[in-house]
Image 1: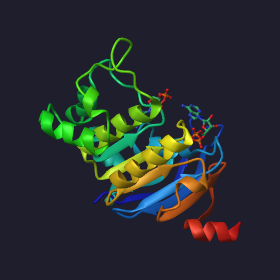
Image 2 (image 1 turned 180 degrees about the vertical axis):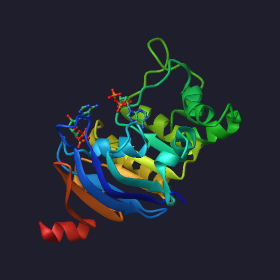
Image 3 (image 1 turned 60 degrees about the horizontal axis):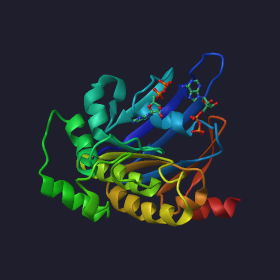
Image 4 (image 1 turned 30 degrees about the vertical axis):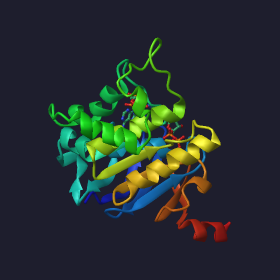
Length: 229
Ligand code: ADP
Ligand code: ADP
């Protein structure tokens, strides 16, 4: 479930300056497609269009064959889990922060503390500081730990579609590797769109799209792209 299709998508924030110039690609259900390219190429814009922060000017974006403009925003956003680059946490416990994603997405669904704890443990999110408040006088979390909370939140929401927007780019190399492993677990069997800076972080993607100035410059598997360059 969750097959994504972009068909000849054109988008501009400002009519005078096109950002995406006819983008077509598909993410088959359960597969992972990575979008790489230089800063300003339009990568984040692509992911925002899928989440429908903005409407496209022409072309079509579909999920499971349905144009996203015909789906309610609520059901679209329930279907999509996003792990952003910088996770902002609530001034509350880790447990609260993990639960938030699901309760906000689906009408006060309440999760058993045990279930939340299990997920926190699974991604090693400080099980011992679990009920301690995050913040100045409480628990201090590193960037990597915050990302783990964001990932745990996404697991609990269990969306068929996952957007990882440079989710590890703000982290040091060791932490990046650890978080990458957690993300690989989460994205297994989910339709995943990964936005990345470097080709080396998306080796296992089913397809990699190289975006330059709003156009697809190259595409292929990691091995195929290495051969081309
Ligand atoms: P990338 O993720 O590849 O770095 P972005 O999608 O963030 O690229 O940005 C593509 C272009 O769109 C950039 O020139 C950026 O300045 C511009 N842009 C991004 N967000 C906005 C916005 N909200 N309003 C106007 N221009 C924007
Ligand atoms: P703006 O309205 O300022 O032009 P956006 O609507 O793209 O910008 O995004 C508003 C804020 O939400 C930005 O800080 C952006 O980084 C953040 N954001 C973008 N996509 C998501 C998302 N899928 N989930 C949560 N926050 C997001």
